[in-house]
Amino acid sequence: MIKEIIEYYEEDYPYSSCLILGSTNEDKIMHVVCALERDNICMITAYYSAPSECLDDFKTRRS
Image 1 (cartoon, rainbow, N blue to C red):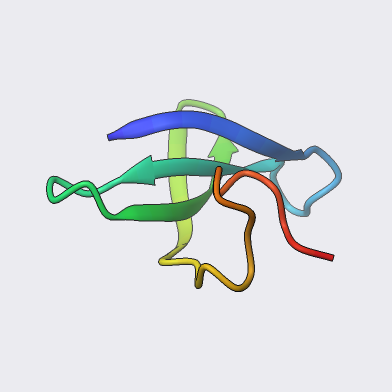
Image 2: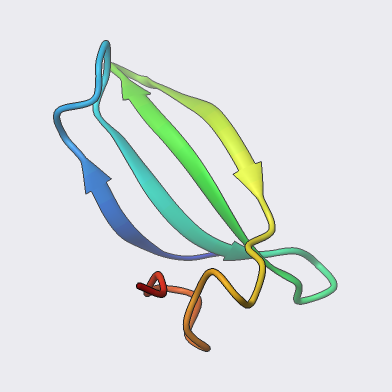
């Protein structure tokens, strides 16, 4: 399930992309990077973020 878009990468080439915060059917949090090509959505990558990489909201990266 998509929760929200948390980052936009408008300068990505060849298409703008975004980072989406989502979850699986088992409520495991994941991130998905997608690009928009006219009427198509291209999934670039999907991954589970380690808790050490993000704050508890999984929207903010740790410094």
